Length: 82
Image (cartoon, rainbow, N blue to C red; front, side, top):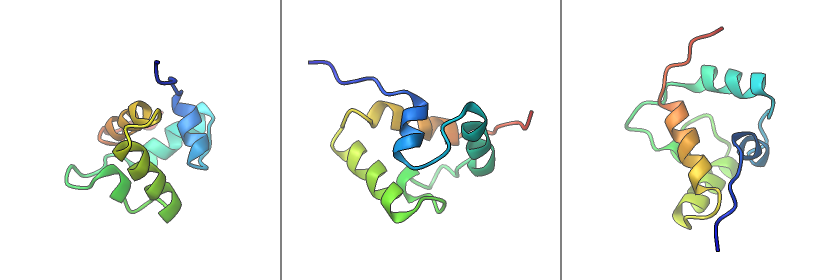
């Protein structure tokens, strides 16, 4: 059975963050680039609940893991303000 494929905006909704394209872009511009030595779930801008969700979903290789990996990659980039 295949794992469900979640959209980036659905992960943001799950984390209680803005889900619009502009809201996601603003979040990435504000928090990226995340230093290489900081694990995604340990980033200082997450609440305890957000951090816990990210850790648990990755550890369980749950259906959110793929899109969490995408978020991790996105936060390692430098985003130019448009």
